[in-house]
Length: 497
Image (cartoon, rainbow, N blue to C red; front, top):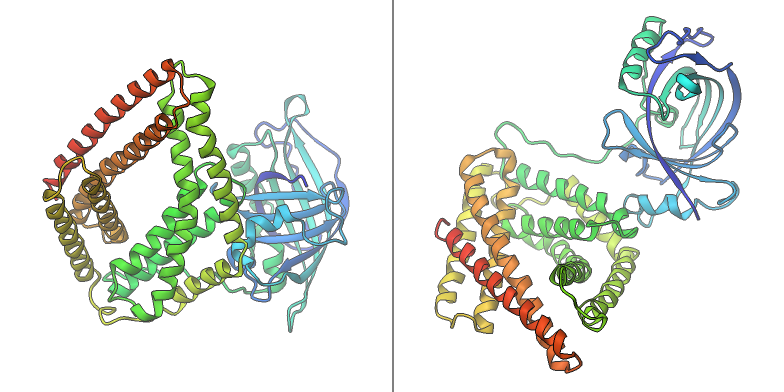
């Protein structure tokens, strides 16, 4: 089923019914305008009983009439004043059918296991005038709307109002938008009282709980604010993982790990017993995503290794073929996990944690005091691991594993410091930079270690020709030199910790 997406940039105004719109042909870049054309639009809006979509400024509707009849999903955009609109026409998804899957997938992380139902019906008499530029290029259009809306929520009411919408088209720009706003307001238009027709139809809606730090935040305020930040990141990357977007698995996995790092890095701020289940579920999700991410990394490394090498198809297949199959299998497992009630229950649990955090013994302490304690604890753990490293034979498997342990502890330190970023303390940033360098250097070392083991397994299979064996030897020598450089970078950073 095909879906098309566009970014919608528009201005919305309230006006008195019957108020005459001004002539906009004098706006910059406008050469002419079409004759006004009137349409009758009828839309049904869908949401959950809890209004999970409306609370996240998302609208899902089925609309007949006009030039874009079909199913529409509107979501916030990174562009200020813009929204993303995803459309599936009735030729792809009938009006009397279920909500089409391409519109459900992007919002599953919001609706989860809850059912969608009609929450409002809105009828609009729309008169559209299109503004044209040179060679009849469409610049913008003004829609004069007379709206009748009926809320289908318990106790809902009927509303009638008039509004104007000025939307940029493919040839429009910010200068035109700014000029249009000035002209329309001078003609009597008022700032819209609601962000959308649906918001006006159903009235106030619950919104996603977004904690804010006070001037002197407590430890609980800092921790809950950070959890909300990473919850938002996890939900934002959910639909991108479902559509296999580049780097989405990595970013969603990072969000899981950062959530876990807050829970484990500040164990006395929240009630540990009441957050233990969330921590373990996040760990499982991160592991599932990690299998897909690790195979992605390995595929990238395999490609970079063979860049510029005259390797045979057999060697290329030996390096990348099995990894491709592993990656495809891991992605399928990730998608399966993200379609489960267990995953949606985890998202609900995180939301409940943010809305009603169970305080631990240090919840009311100053945020800086608890961060200082967490940093000191992480640094002790790193130094203990480094002392253990010094007792091991350099280059041994146990020594390499210990470097990996140090890397994980440096990452935990870095995440704890990242959580304290709103406090804007220079001493935290300096330690965080050191932890980042340690993590990066030892991450490179671990990737190299995995690659060298992969090369050894290919050699041990005994299926390569002499020329390919020579290439493998050269690759291994290059990796060995890279590993030595990574260890040197780690040691240089570790001296400053």
